Every structure is written in C-alpha cells, then in structure tokens.
Amino acid sequence: MNLSGLKRFLRRATPDQDGRTRILARRIYILPTGYGLVFGALVLLMLIGSINYAINLGFLLCFLLAGLGLVTMIHTWRNLLGLEIQLGRAVPVFAGDQACFELQAINPHSRERPGLAFGFQKECCAVLDLPPRETLQVRLCSPTRVRGWFALPRITLITRYPLGLFKAWVYLELSASCLVYPTPGKKNPPADAPDYTSSQKGDRGVGVDDFVGLRHYRPGDSPKHVNWKAVAREQALQTKMFGGDRSEQRWLDWHRLQGSTEHRLSQLCRGVLDACEEQEEFGLRLPDFELCPDRGQRHRHACLEALALFGTES
Image 1 (cartoon, rainbow, N blue to C red):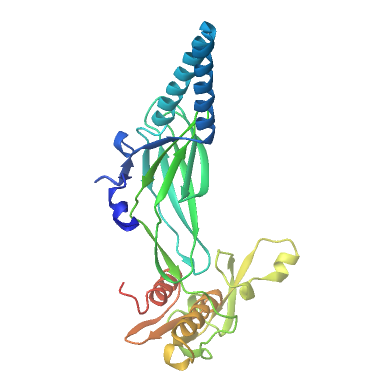
Image 2 (cartoon, rainbow, N blue to C red):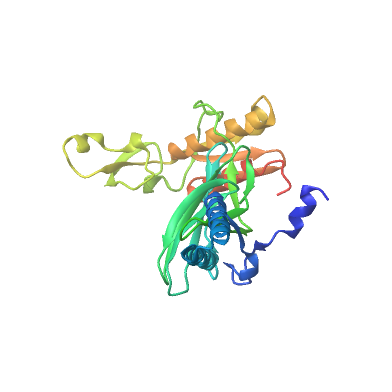
C-alpha cells in the first residue's frame, strides 16, 4: 500500500455540527521522545545491574523511575484530551504574502494545559500555555504562491508536557480557506485617464470642481485632499471637500492590456489599489464579466475577488 493509501487510516480531529473541534481519546497519538528512549534505556540498564548484583535499593530506584515514566506518559496524553478548537476568520491577502488563520483554543476543564504547540507538519507556528477554563487566540500563518482560494493545511497540535519524555500529538482537519488576490503589478496603473461624468453627489464633497469647505479627517481619505497647512499650524487633521457637477471615473479594461493572463490580472490589481487610494470611481471589465463604476471597500473587495477567481472553477 502506498503512502496516499495509508493517509486514509490517520486519526484526525474534525469539526462537529456546531463548528467546534473536540479532541477525543482515540484521536491522540503518543510516542517516546529521544530523551524518553534514553531514559528508558538507563532504567533498563539499572534493572539489569540490580538483578546481576542483587541490589535491593537498585530495584527500588528502577521501579520508582519506571513509575515516574508511566505517570509522565499519562499526563502528556491528558494534556490534549478534551481540548476544543474553534475556527476564526481569515483576512484576504495578496499572492506571495502570508495567509493567516485565527483559531480559538478553548480549555473547558479546571486544569491548566501548558506547552501546547500548533504548527503545519514539522513547522511550529505558535506555542501557548492555556489556563483552566480560558480561551486564547492562536494565529497560524502559511506562505501563499498563487491566487485563488488557499485551503488551510492540516494542523498538528503537539505537547511534551511535563518532562519531555513523551510526545503526544493530534491532527486537526479544519475546513477553512483564505482568498488570495493576485500580486499587484508595478506602480503605473493600467487604467485610462479619468473620465469626467455628471455626478449627482458633487455637492456632498465627492466632486472635483470647486472647493466647498473642510470636514474632519476620516481613515481612507486621499492624502492630496488633506489640509496640510492646518496640520503645520498644529490644528486638527482636516480634509478638503470639493463640489460641482463632475466626478472622476475610470475603467479598468482587460482588453486594453497586453501580456499573459497573470500579467494582466497583476496590472488590473494595481489599478484597483491605485484607484481606491485616489478615491476615484472605477469599473472593471473582464471577459464575460463586468462591474459598474463605484467606490468604497465593498467595491474594492468585489473587484479583487473577481481578479483572484478569474479562470478558476470557483
């Protein structure tokens, strides 16, 4: 039987109907560590010497150490038993960045859970000590290479508490994905020059014609509209408002770009980011897909999601 066939027999902890993953007894693996093997070999040598020379105190010490090893094995196993894992959210990232998944480690019992290590395969990402009846946040990150949906890899939860003689671990299979946007291209946006179109919202500060006043700065405002003279006078941060009957509007068009698919998506991604930074209304045209001009974080995410999933089954 090959390796892929053996994976079917792995004991994996999976979420219940309520979304929580509970670590049960039959999902935990346990084996001696390198220190545990050395410890067992020393106890065996002491036992052989005690038998050979009939040393009663040697027998006592051997049985004491063997009992200590057995108690340690039980405590290592119990350190994972009954833990609960709740999956959190994953914020979209750009290809090449770290995809980070948030987890909640829940200890529903009255005993502490020290030395818990979360990681992917052999890579350890987070280590924590979980107090009794407490919940702690765990953040696991993995590098991304291509756009689209990035599935959460299999998580390994490991403990060597209390003496490091045994290693207990459990495999966590959590159904989660992180959306990966295309890698942004160079700073030059591929969009056309802004089109000036009629706007019904010009008198509310989103036009480009005439200066109509100041308002308090809000996160996301364009730096070019900040009243820097007031900042130099150590006044509150303010943003200039413009009115009129015109608004800037541009289209990001797939058919006006050249190059491979990934190169075009990369340039369109840069165009979306630059248009949002300049607070311009923009639309997106892809083969068999179009988003009308708009602005805001929701429109930004819709455009980037369309680029991330372009040409995929999703």
